[in-house]
Each structure stands twice: as structure tokens, then as C-alpha cells.
Length: 169
Length: 100
Image 1 (cartoon, each protein chain N blue to C red):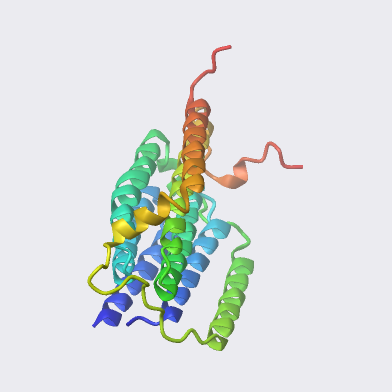
Image 2: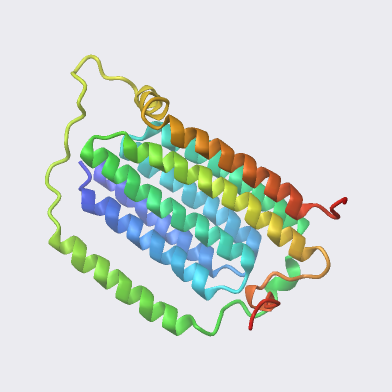
């Protein structure tokens, strides 16, 4: 049962992402990427990462993609629809992608992963996914967490400075 | 139970689709969207390994990847808005001021 849902979500993701990279209209591409992220949230739930699934919908589909759509509205995108959409290096890219895909296929055919490990905590004391994630994030990964906040601050200032009309001296 | 290989194949296929989008399209916004797709393909692999190894680290790293993706989206869109201010410049091969 689980595997059929996985195939459904994975097939939906591949279909919508293929449609996304072939659209001429940018807004259609952004909305198709939102759909891809909803399918991805389904894959995360099947993998037992419920918190990431919620973050995927709230933050990615609801935050980052809305930022994209608002920025697209600020730009003049109608002209781009009538222009040539593809680089002239398409054949080279396709050949490289097929070669890379065959390489990954060959490597994955060799590796035997075996049965997945069991979670360490004892039965009956199982913490939820959010609790387990928070316990690791705020102890073992506290320093990377703080570095990520500085990265967010820097990119926020950078975005304001770059998009500002004129910079006062 | 979903085999581990399925997650890896899904991640690889999505990454390849995103890379094709980056290399083949001229529209800068679609290139940014394809980069988001590639970052998410990495997340699929992280979460798959997190489940297989029964280790939370994979999910923590997926959160950091999402953080970096948010930063990249903000800065990339700010650059595109700055480029769009004076005239329409949405194709990456038109932005060639520094090209030798």
C-alpha cells in the first residue's frame, strides 16, 4: 500500500517538474513547482519526516514560492514569452543528462542497502518526529543553527540593498 | 516498506531534471526555479538516508538546505528585480557585461 502511494507521489513530482522546465510562461512554471512541492511533502510523510512535510508546505509552497510569484508580478514577463526559450546547447545537455542518468543507474544497481535500521528509542517511549528533531537540532547542531540565522540576516540585508532603487551616500 | 533505492532514484531523476532546466532555459526566473528543484532533490536523498539509517541528522540537514534555498531565492530575486528596473532583461545570455 505504502509503495503505491510512493509511486503516485514520485510520478506526480517527475511529471510536474518536467512540465515546469518546459513552460514558456513563468507563472505557470512557478505554480507547477508549487504542485511538485506538495507531492514532495507526501514523499516526506511516507519517509516518516512529518515535520519536514509541514515545513515543505508552509515554508516552501507558502513562503518561498509566494515570494517568487510576487517578484514575477514586479517584472515584465510578458515579453519573454514571445522570445526564444532555449539555449542552443540543448543537445549537449541532453546527452550529458542521459550519460549521468546511466551512471547513477549503474552505481545503484551495484549497491545493496539491506533492511533499514530501527530507531534507537525503546517501544512505548517513542518521541514524535518534531520532538526528536528538536532534540537533535538544539543540542548537537546548535552552532550550525546559529550560523544559519546569520546567513538569513546577511541575505535579508543583501536583498534589500540589491533591490533598492538608489543607495544614499 | 519503500526500498532505499527508490528514494535515491527519485532524488537523482529530480536533480537531473533541475540541472537540465538550468542548462537549457534562457529565462532567468525558470533557472532559479530549477535550482530550487535541485535543492529539493537533495532533500529527498537526505530524508531517505535519515529513514534508512534511523538517524535524525539527515532531517536536520534538510532544514539547513531549506534555509539556504530561502536565502538564495531572496538574493536571486533581488538581483533579477534590479536587472529588470531599467529595461526588460530576463534572459541570462543577454546579461553579458562581464563576458570577455
